[in-house]
Length: 284
Image (cartoon, helix red, strand yellow):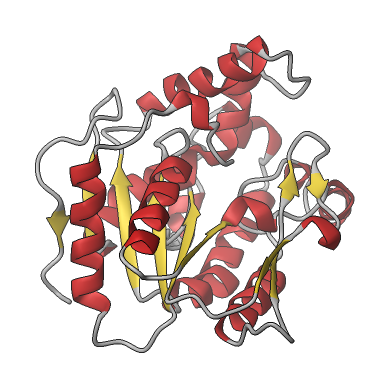
């Protein structure tokens, strides 16, 4: 669910610079490429911030590549198979279980070994067509970057305990996942393939939203921009409300757990303005 660039203005240069300074200070003793996660709820400006961080890093001579978790979605056909064999709610992309983690792992490995003779190819997902673009349209990388930024709404989110899954949080869970099949499978994926990926992160940066309530407004800003352009996939508010129910559970888990798990945090207000100084965990 990569944000539309038109719905989020650039983060202040001082914030970008301070984040790069803090990240490099923590990572300089580690072997590169450094894998840095950038997490934030839908509409928080992750894609914008990732692009700014990459530009700032490259300007300092730190070769940087940005990967979006969105580009590793399973295509419509693969998700249809999941919907048929596991649970109908897997037809909607976004939650753990709807990404091709094997492809992501292979891409990370390829980036570490990239050369002119054996380039790494970075996948791209076409949300309008709801499928991955053909490899001929993927970005080619011919040398290992020093920094890899992986951005996504659920990056770093941990699984829940079984008891936490039992109470439905919204009408979608109550009416369409009565047997907890979908919730349990999403949680299983988080506890296994995604947890393994999170352990590969050298650093986690968090864009910390003030609450889940702001997500609907932030996402509606994106949808309005799509509607103005006449994009066929644009959602009205009713469709958006149902759509966000798919992500409410893990968004609330992220709000509760990631501030303590993240190495660097930027606190956002309801207008996505950074409030206060960059908050760095002192464990590193």
